[in-house]
Length: 147
Image (tube, rainbow, N blue to C red):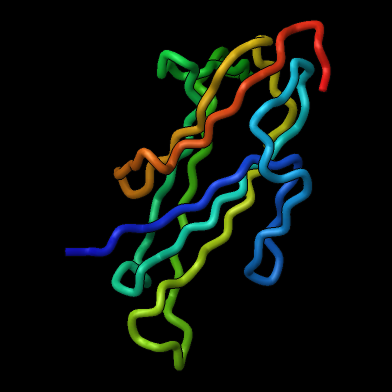
């Protein structure tokens, strides 16, 4: 039986991966808006030894309080707001057997308009699996307020 991937996620104003590490600016918020502002999702995948040297696919989808996909306008019309990607991590020479390996991912998104007073959640799926801990909820301030 293969070991499960572990995941840590944070919302931030900006995120960057440099030298294998996550750099965050304004990390850890859970309330935004109501005006559109850019934001980032910082993800740290912890890949178990027996899951290295294989491709891993992920999908982050934004849903509303009812679990319905949040739609965004694109050149092709209204589409669900999601981010997909894949990665593979190899075992470095000389690393001790059984060591898990971190894979940092920084996803910077442009300004999004969310209705004021709403509650939303980014839900992560990795290799077709999901977990209750792989959710990143946030709220928007009511229209007419600022923070």
